[in-house]
Image (tube, rainbow, N blue to C red; front, side, top):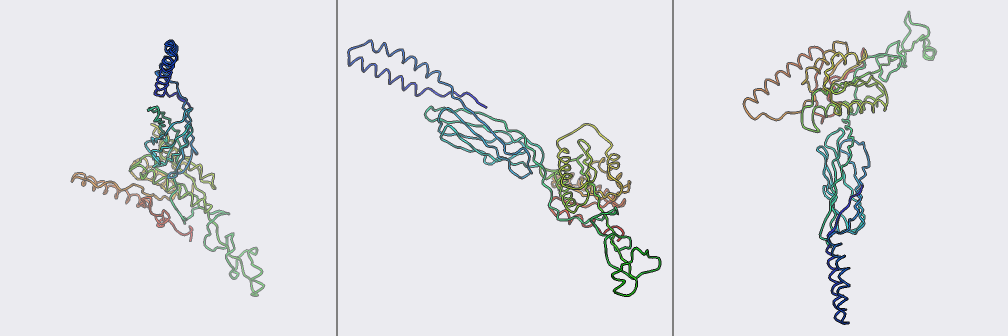
Length: 416
């Protein structure tokens, strides 16, 4: 990127004065008035040149060190300025975007013909946001003029930061040959849990011969059943209530990612359903690749909007595999999200709702206080109705540890 900049003609005027003074001195010293006429041509040339000075080349190049990072992390933009003239100072002023912050806001460097300045940008909430731009201004005291150039910076994706979750001990709902959760001691378990005396009817293949030989009478082996946990996280993107950075969608996305990270670390299977924008569903799976897919799906909850109104209740109920536990992050302000919660519970899945509605400002008038009280009574009735259907509603503000909030929904292995 380059731009032409015109500088003032003060040095050219000084050159004109020097040429004319020298010509006049020589003319008087040698008695040659024609020398003044001869010097008039170069003096006129210098005067014209001073009125129309040469354009100086100005090159501004901006590089950003990353196009993807996590919210609250900084992205560094390096501004490199080059000119073919030596300037006294270079001022780089940052113009951050609507959801980004620049530090420092203004940086002054120089003198020189090549200057490099670094500016750090931070996003106030997750999403893909334009960083903004920078304005480069050159100063030259000798010429008593300046020149400016504005450069627009690209957009950067700021991924949401998962909420801190140490571990989630939820009750598994699926028994299988392989699982990460141990069940109660039983004769049919695959993991060794001890021995007991033989009873009539016990299969011979379960006789534990080392104990039998040691104690002199038959003993059989007892096993522990293995259970696997399939969890589907549902994020309500149909409503976004609250201030930027602490809205219901911000809190819901961070909580879902924190829960997914903890469960995937426990080698459980996790799935995702995003209500709103482009309806997206990921079936439960293991591993870091599944976490990356979930991160991408949650980013699309804000990046894409549509005027289509799909039947989210029916779609959510179909997308959840049978026997999976469901945790819904929602402010409970949209009827479609409530219908999805009801449909999931009616399909037979254990459902837990995390209420992520932020604290609303205090009402200022008596009428507003009355409306707020009626609205709170309606929400209490709604939560009571969900509890009657077997759907617990747990409030979470995004600050308390999520694993402590989910403790009432946690339990021992099914069948304990």
